[in-house]
Image 1 (cartoon, helix red, strand yellow):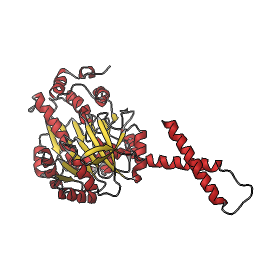
Image 2: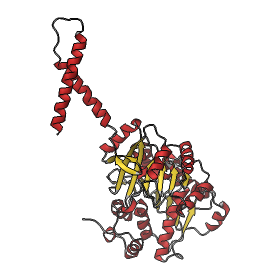
Image 3: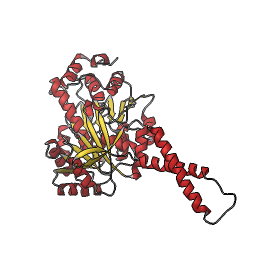
Image 4: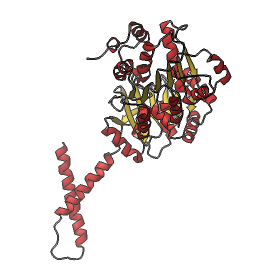
Length: 437
């Protein structure tokens, strides 16, 4: 039986907030995590991107918030300023919906902002601190902020925090926190290096892992063979067959992203570009333009698959497939969110066959397609030629086995044997085709 928000021990005020947020029912991660957080236990929650992790910790945090305690009660950290800003916007939205703008206070602490102005605003401590670990740590070290009063510390996108090298700053923040602080860790994957970090701070945490399909059921996965073609030309052909609200086009590096964006602009497409090589100001500008729907296509690196939440993505196009399965999942997780439908189209070569095979073994269902004269048509799967080659080799061996070996070797015997082998091979192939019919 599916749970409702009423079943999760949320009070009526928070239930009203979920209704105004248009949440019909809790996601699986929310259903499992919310009661555990309300019980005061530390949590390690593993679930794919787009599964509703943010509200899994925000809703119980607001229920436990004590508006009479004018001090830091909750610290929420995220690995990038974009993710921190998006979390802060959700916090502000909940405060506004609840009509508590005077009673519930929150501050966003990220780099790239005026530090002196921030210090002035922190003279009255916020109840909820949302930010990047580096900026929060700077302010704590300067004495502008104390987090020792915090009851709960959230590490969002923990694996990305590790990848970007911010886990040490999180470590330093936790050293300055209460020893018995409730620690809430949310991550799409749990690398081995994170396990060592957990052992330092977590004693008997509740480990919650959502065993889901590799991607949402509402998503279609298409593969297009690259052959000897240019990626930009293939994507241009794809663009003539789809009508995306917003399509994210992934590359495996900044240089490839720059070159592809330029090539697509040459085809006349309005294309945005976002990757880690842009300055914070440029990234902020591009994100604003994306939100204003200036672009229908955005070329990106894996930064956008994890570090930035771009809403309204209807299509994901992989100009190059990544090397690891989890990167594919992070990328396609940008679409088909919150029950919406989505399409992932990937350009592939034979070098990608192992990845495709592993993804298929994990439950992904690919359709092999080609674009011809502005229409999608079915194509042969990546391993069909390999299967045919294997079948041919098997038939060859069987035919040679049946060739009569001459007792006496005479001139031209090899030629005769080869001719006999070809005849037997044709017969075997004919028989196999007859069986298939």
